[in-house]
Structures are given as C-alpha cells and as structure tokens.
Image 1 (tube, rainbow, N blue to C red):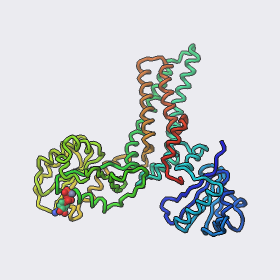
Image 2: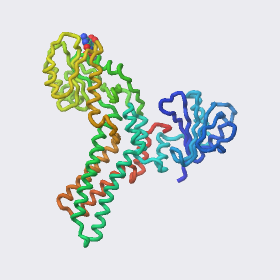
Image 3: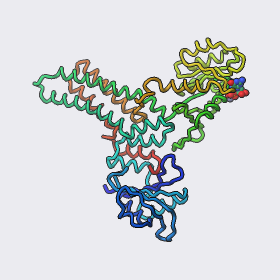
Image 4: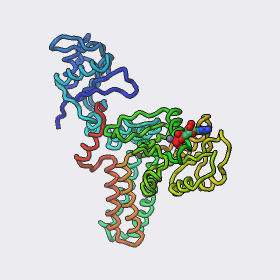
Length: 458
Ligand code: GDP
Ligand code: ZN
C-alpha cells in the first residue's frame, strides 16, 4: 500500500515558544523543498541534518519564517518514512501559514494520531507502545509519565511476548503428544501445563495488580471531600489546590460542565470531584438522600472525611463513617487551634484502621502529614521502587483479565483430568488474547478507533 504524505503542527511538550510543522511520507522532502530557501536544496541534504533557511510562499515570494529544517530520511525515523520538521519561531500565525503551504504543495492534513499510526503500521512500534504514546500525551504527573515511558520503550511488550512464548512452548509440547500418542507422555504434559500455566497466571496477576495503580496515575484518583457543614471542607480543598500544582488538562472530550480539579499530591494525581456540587457536600445526605450519597461516595476511590476538633462527634458524623464502610478514606480532624471537644480515641475507633490526621487548616498545620498519608495509601510497598506499573490502559487490563481467566480454565481442566487437547484450547485462547495486547491479531477497525483518540500532530 502506497502511503500519501501527511503534515500537522506537532509542538513538543513543554516548549511552547517553538512550533513544529511535521511532514511524513514519500513526498515530504519534495514538498518542503518547494517552500524552503537555503544555501542548497533539502533534496541534497544528508539524512538527520538540521538546515538553516527561510520558508517562502512560492506563489507570492513572501518570506514567512526564518527556520531550521530537520531532514530525516526513511527508515530511521519515527514513522519509518521520510520526515521533515520545520521549526517555526514566529508564533501560532506563522506556524499555521507554514502548515497551510505544505498542504497546498503536496501534503494532506494528518488525522489525529496518524503519525503514530504509521509508526505502528510500518512496524516501528507495536500497539501497546502506540497506546503508551497517547498516555504520555495525557500524563498528568511525572509518575504517570514514567509508566507511559516504560510502555513506549516496550517493557509491557517484552513481558507479554515472554508470556506468549511460555504458552506457545506448552502448546507445542501438547502438539507432539497428540501427534505421537504412542509416545505416552500424557502425564508429563499435564504436569508441564500445570507448572507453566501457574507461572503465567501469577505473572498476569502481578501485571493486573500494578495495573490498578497505573490506571489511577493515568486518570487521577477520584476523590470526594465529605463532612458536616462548617468543619472546613472548602478550606481543605483550597489548601490542596494552592499547595500543589493544579494540573491543567486538555483531554479531548472532557465535558466542561462537570468540573474536576486535578492536583498533584506527591505524585498522586487527585481528581477532586465536583459533580452537581458534590464537592461542596454540606449535608450531602440531606441534599441527595442516603442512597445517592452512598453511591457518590462508593464511586469515588478516595474519601476525605473532615471532622471538627472543636465539637464532639455527632450522629451525623457517625452516619458519614457508616457510608465509608469498606472504602479507602482518610479522616481529618480539623481546627486543632481551637479548644478540644472531640475524642480522638473515638475518631480512631470509628476510622477502623484508616489514617487519622489532625490539622489546623486556618494555621496551615497538618497538610504535610495529610499529603504523606495520601501518598502512602497509593504508593505503599513496592510501588515506590523500580517496579512501576507496566499497564495503565483499560484495554490492556480487560485483555489481561481474559487471558488470566483462560489460563485458569486450562489449569482447572488439567486438574480435573480433561484430555490434553481440551486443555490446549484454553491455552491457545490465552495466547491469542495476549497477542491482542501487542497488536498481533487485532482487526483494522480497532486500530482506527485507537489512533483517532490521539492529538493532532502526534
Ligand atoms: P465547610 O463548610 O466544611 O466547607 O467549611 P469551610 O472550609 O467553609 O470553613 C468553615 C469555617 O471554618 C470558615 O470560617 C473557616 O475559616 C473556618 N476554618 C476552617 N479551618 C479552620 C481551622 O483549622 N481552624 C479554625 N479556627 N477555623 C477554621
Ligand atoms: Zn464549604
């Protein structure tokens, strides 16, 4: 299939002052040469060089930009095609004009994610890596970025390939057994399936466990602040927002009417919910009724319950504790600058093992402890070390769940003495499902759908 030549504005992350027009495809160099005026033509430039010159409108002769043009020839490029990158310094208008010129002179506007799609189609990256590029664009904290980077570098792919290899070896062994029944290795084969299957099951389970944290890193930890009126909920929200860098998001399709505030608390992206005013949960129960408030609290991944140090625990407080049963929560006893009327022991008892923090938000005290508690809750144990999550993508999670189930079925079939070729069906299914993670055996429509989620120019 002959690819056409595509172009888009592709501005690198964190470098707002420069705009880059990126062109990829067989006519990339030819198109750029029509606009480029320099000491020699780009067609004569060596690969992987940066060339100083001007961009000119060939029709009017107007100079649009003073520029550095990168010439990157296939196949050692991101898309494995010829790539031209025109670096513009003159702000948005001139970047746009340069893009328009490329579109008049041989390129077509790239669809969202099309550069990465080409990288995938040309075999430069596999599907899980392509998806990671998208996660990288959306990453809200450094940690989330690291997870995505790991994936871009193919660490998930490596793991998945290894697991598939294990499964394949098992299948091959079974094949031998079926083809040569006189070579009676049935028992040995079953034992091997059990051993390898169990090892694969454990590894998939491990990936799934870390996936939960990965998902949080990517999407933010949905958090509600609850408490009776006047205990300090708004003050808590304000200090979380002001103490921490608020995270700016530009995820396409985010509905603007649901306000979500993102803050980066020591690497944990909190998504503070304010759906239908729930962030301001003055008397959440009264306003929404018990059932709806229970649902809102249950749907959140973290609840911050605020109590007042200056008042004894009330029935309304106890009711809120009831709603928090089985939920990740941190209890905040606020207003410690005032006279103590609340029994901390009682609060700790109600907290039932969950962290209890004392604060005076008015005097800026206890915020550090609270932030540490939030971090500890989600980066407990091995998460802190090098074993960051490999999986953060819900498509991958769903596939890994399926693979795990298939392996489990194989294991129980083997256990119950089913014929070996029946067991093999489940193993093969697990192998296929894992293949979908890295894009072997996925259909075109899925690929189109995935890449259309990308930002333009990536
Ligand atoms: P909300 O109704 O739960 O949102 O509570 P607010 O955050 O609006 O706070 C209610 C009142 O308590 C405001 O006047 C705050 O200034 C005050 N307040 C908040 N935190 C503290 C604190 O730590 N100490 C004292 N003394 N007052 C506080
Ligand atoms: Zn308030």
